[in-house]
Length: 140
Image 1 (cartoon, one colour):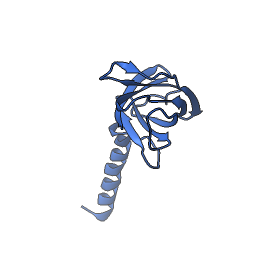
Image 2 (spheres, rainbow, N blue to C red; image 1 turned 180 degrees about the vertical axis):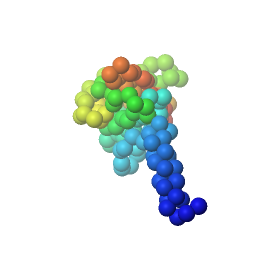
Image 3 (cartoon, rainbow, N blue to C red; image 1 turned 90 degrees about the vertical axis):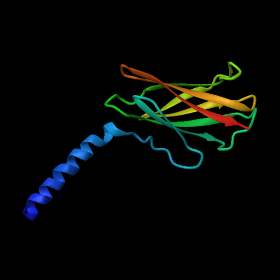
Image 4 (cartoon, rainbow, N blue to C red; image 1 turned 135 degrees about the vertical axis):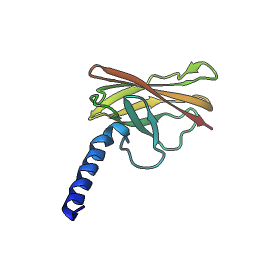
């Protein structure tokens, strides 16, 4: 095969791979320490807490970045909750979530009142799409 044909074939192959890329996976962009990631079918969530080391009965904030794993628009609304599945109860406080635009959110007023397994639920809502993405953490 002549050199020009190989180059054209390689470019065509790479173009196909690049076009297929977004459908294969989605990395929500959030940098720094203690970043958690959770995947749903439609959306991916990256989140971190401030302070990064959580303590029992101390308020904290969550920064959330979302991305779409499909052609769905980014979520415009987010509700976050945390429950202890083994104890069948949730938090004693309801956090306030603020949209920062472009799939970014800040949630303030979290307080986990006891150590153990906690499950965070990220209820994401976009134009015609909704999904709940969950992740578990252990608070010591």
